[in-house]
Image (cartoon, rainbow, N blue to C red; front, side, top):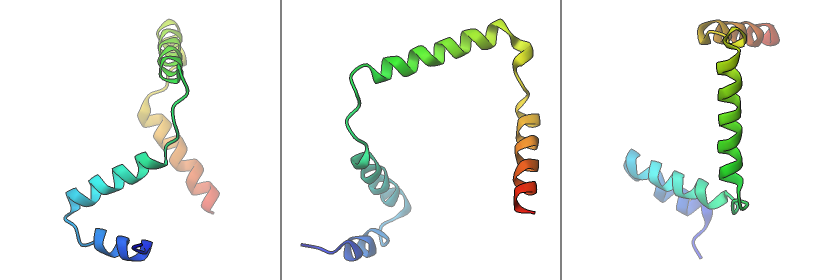
Length: 79
């Protein structure tokens, strides 16, 4: 059996596109089986949130403001 270290060393020699493909496959292999109805439940949730946001646009925030607030919080946390 090939060691994980050996596999990694070989994978790192691949071109970037091939490494990305290997990485995607490895990550996909870690995902467990999806529960029946999970995709539909996520879609329903997204649609519900979209309807709520459309109904109360004053609750929405501009991404620039959200990003600035998050950046300020991160800076404060590091200080």
